[in-house]
Amino acid sequence: MDRLKNLREEVFEANLGIYRAGLVTMHSGNASGIDRESGLVVIKPSGMDYEKLSPALLVTTDLLGRKIDTGETGDQLKASVDLPHHLYLYSHCPDLGGVVHTHSNYATSFAVQGRPIPAYLTAIADEFGPEIPCCPYVDNIGDHIGEAILRHRNSAPAVLLAHHGAFTFGATPRAALKAAVMLEDVAKTCHLALQIGNASPLPAEEVRKWYDRYHTTYGQAGTEDTD
Ligand SMILES: [Zn+2]
Image (tube, rainbow, N blue to C red; front, side, top):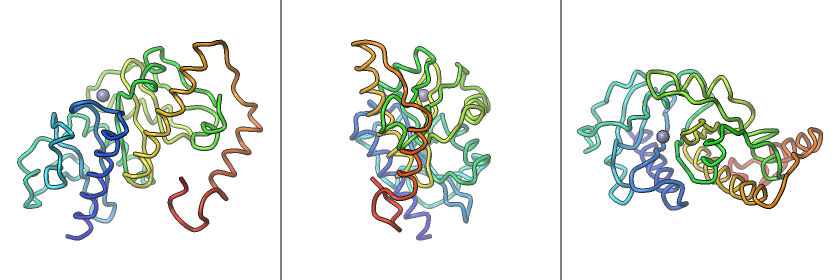
């Protein structure tokens, strides 16, 4: 099935992307994607180092988490332990095609404190809107993480999880990867700025202007990728 093969490649690239960007270490974190037509989800296998990952080793499931026989080596592997959170987001948000989870350092430094990141920067206003939300601590049992993310989701393609890390998402695995990379980049700048003094968010009207421009006219008109 060509669609599934393409999805495997996209999900592999997203996993490789978070590793290359330094957002994950060893085997922490994960990226997934969904083919909406078949309802099949492809995700990183549990506990596997990124150095050893290949498209064939990714695990395919349906939206209920049942493994699918695809004839690839990944059929023999266990899916990421975070699969239920990815599935919850896909099941409740038809707009999502890719999800990424990391414990990237600067974003997680805000999560440690349970702090959302307001639009201190035009880059935050552009990509995320008025605030990157942070949900209170929840454990990873059942749907707790998925429910907490959706309770706090706003215009931003990212939600911080207190004492844990971040989930980012988008229409494709690449969009979720981009959100994870941008999140860490702006979190780093904000973290550094807050070391040398207080900071104020941009006024709401300015945030709206930047966000609207970025989501309507920025980049190459008519192309999906606006980075
Ligand atoms: Zn985690």
